[in-house]
Amino acid sequence: MSSSDFPPPVRRYLRAVTPVVTGLMLLVPASGGAQIVAPRESAPVTLGPVSLYPQVRMIDSGKDSNVFRDSANPQEDYTATLSSRVMGVTKFGPNELLFSSGSDYVWFQRFASERSNNASYAARLNLAVSRFEPFIGASYLVSNSQPTPEIDARVRRVERAAQAGGALHVADRTAIIASARLEHSTYDDDEVFRGVALGEPLNRTGRIFSGGIRYELTPLTTLSVTGDYGEDVFPDSHRRDATSYSINPTLEFSPDAAIRGQVTAGFESFRPKDEGLSERRGAVYAAALTWTMFGRTTVGLQGSRNVGYSYLDSEQYYLWTTASLDLTQPIFGPVDIVADVEWDRLEYLSPTGGSSLSGQRIQMNRGGGGVGIALGRGVRMTLTAERTIRNSNFDVRQNFRATRVLSSITVGS
Image (tube, rainbow, N blue to C red; front, top):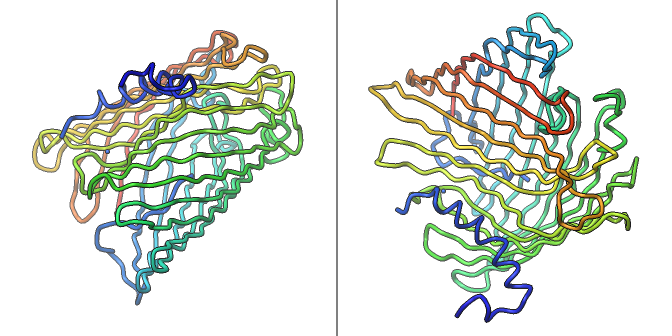
């Protein structure tokens, strides 16, 4: 059977996703809203029925050559981030309750205005009722960080989300799945970037409904195909209100497989409610894969492509494509070499050109590497250097170069 045997909508979908899937599979050796998942290893701390997985990290400790991402007047400073996390798991029969809590304290020596405290909380209840497995969860985040590559400033925002759904097993390897998710994102009233108060264009309430089927291809690989409907409302300025429809096939690999993680390659119809703006139709994808080559080299691949919301009233939407690759190569004993590269591209959508782009774009490239040492008892130390370059073809204020030399220490799982 050739592609010409399919109806026109299916042929358009195949043409859109085939390059995406092919490109991702070429990077995978032939032999991998955030969901809380219980760790597989034994808990280091147990309090009765509760298993706790704590972690403390000193990250980003070092020197930043361009704190404010300014091309004309770069300012350097010493910085450090102290991060703490804990996950708790309680099992009662086939059911489980998971919760996580985390906080980050970001410190700068000279620029006290850039210091901040960030916090995140999440919980999820997974139930098993015969063939029906419902779940419910919620998350809360307060952050003073850069939200997207477009906004190169540390701004305070609060994100809340609630989700519910379930899986109904209709056969040994087949289940019907469905979920609903509510999101609410707000910026502080005094957060301003390049003269624009961010709350008005970016405060958002979203609803996402998903339904489909999941099939266990092998004991280590699961295929799911879902249809999703999303709706975003901007209560302070309805110019960005939009709906989206998408079809999303997803391959998920077990932690015991040679490849771990999941990859989604789908087709989306993004429809602004403003009749003066055209619909955007095209491929979207998300990947988070990890695998080990030759029993030694660990490779991680992450990437995504979707529509994002701009703070600029002249543009409003952009197509955000991102990809990152990281490697860990043992050298001798507890010492290994680490390296990573990241690529981000924001391409602004043409206001009236259908799926076409306006030609305005921002591109950011980052690369780095260093040395890691496992000190035993769950303690790891790394020393890295990284270089970031960003260029815009329509706003020279977006251009910058920055170098950071950093160290980190991790304690715990």
